[in-house]
Length: 62
Image (cartoon, rainbow, N blue to C red; front, side, top):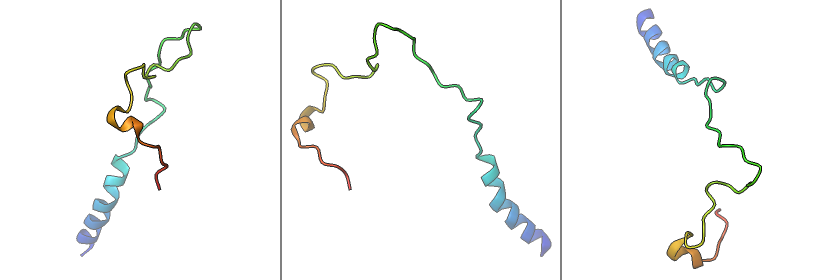
């Protein structure tokens, strides 16, 4: 009975502890620093847009 209870408790707790992440060690990519441009890298140019859905009115999601 004790073994079964311990197995159930460990099987419930063990997955929670194995999913931890260490965000301090994770390095995020940094783009090149330039004083000549502050434009975001992913800004769409003319011709890139919503396509067929670009003419639809924008409504906030509920």
